[in-house]
Length: 76
Picture 1 (cartoon, rainbow, N blue to C red):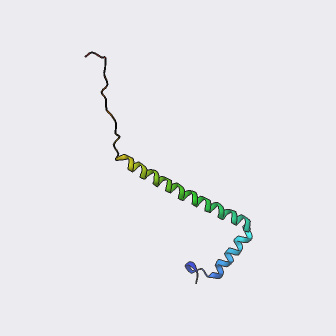
Picture 2: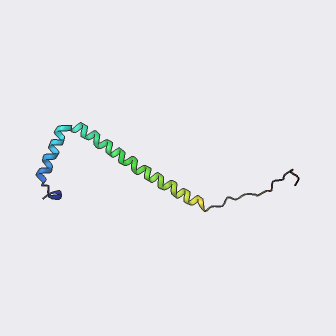
Picture 3: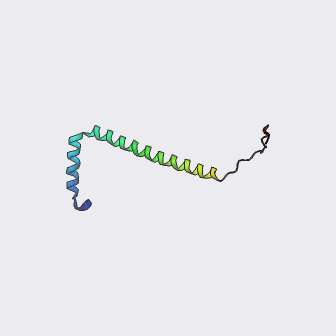
């Protein structure tokens, strides 16, 4: 018994039909494109998490420096 009631022979028959329709070269290209898309998706998720963690780190920081008063020539 295979996946969800589909036998192993049925899966092999479906695979053979797909290979005959598309050919191995086109299936290899589709596999490579799919792998590249998944890799790009994972990279963007990682970059987003890194940016968010950097933002969280910077939210609690105090900027140090000398505070000076502005002198105004205006007469009140």
